[in-house]
Image (cartoon, rainbow, N blue to C red):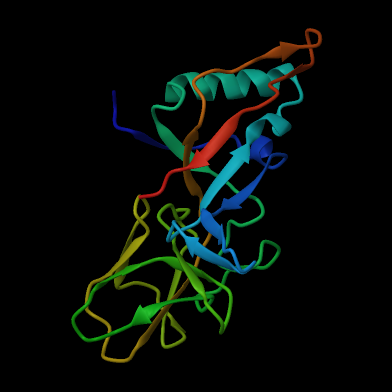
Length: 210
């Protein structure tokens, strides 16, 4: 079996019509006093989707079936485009090289992970972006867009500079990205209405965290 991840995207025209989003795991304990304590068991959120909402025709169904079989059900991961959150900026905006701050130079570090930060001053959440879209990544040093001098590993989201950015230099980026995901079922329950229309009531897809 050629690895546990295929660098291929689930059909985006089908994922466009799907439902899903981030999930967290919080334990809430009710005390005798009526107060409560809340504890987060996950450091990172995890996204779940249902691709079944995007299947409307027999052709859609066949495309998903073909994709599912090549991934061997839950066995092999793939790229998923979350149309509600696939850019370093808002979905209807255009990414710029100063959208997301990756860190500050120290004169020695050459590798920086792409991240997208959610929230503001209260408790921002930095999400590691491990599946950037090749050709979409823009890099800036202290706000100056870089035309070269760095490389990108599109399978990990790590930006590597040929020379370490100087001390205090702000490294920022703009990009598009996919979600590393897998099917969360080994079975497709297919329904055919006629020779043109078909549905799959549920096709669960789950983010794969590294």
